[in-house]
Length: 221
Image (cartoon, rainbow, N blue to C red):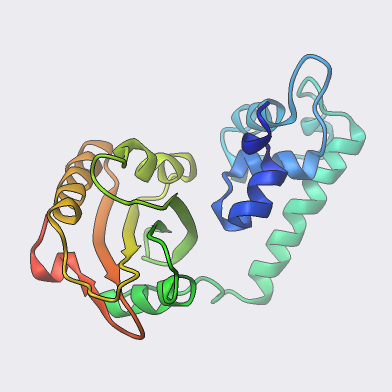
């Protein structure tokens, strides 16, 4: 597996929230086998139980029925998932609700204001418009010729997220949308309709508290 695609290296560079369920599980498993890398093993475990919730409900004995999973790895999986359950139980409001463009902008601004290069982020939302996680999809020149629309939806498909919000920053501070910004928004909205994943908005983040909602302006929607 190329170094840049290894889960631990991706976590170090992008942060834990940018990793897929399989990548996070791979880190918990630590190692694969001589015939299978750890990411492939993690994905196979998730598939065997029809998703992460199924893995969380499985017993140690059930996990051990998956080829490549022994008592040690089954214990690592259940211990990691139990920590997540306890965190949710301790703070059921941990995931912020996004009810307006301003709510999304407030979440995004902390990681985007002051950047010297463009970044394109995707917020994954659940059915109640609560934030599931935030993905950094592109760094550098963000324009329609560089962006693959499939990349915008990759993690939403993996996580079964029903809705997303796109956002990118303008380092110079001017939030006026370019023709490329509008084109990307149109393409994303069309793709979302085909995939049954709603694109709720595309925000442009400027300096300070300034932002622009493409949805509110009717640009690309």
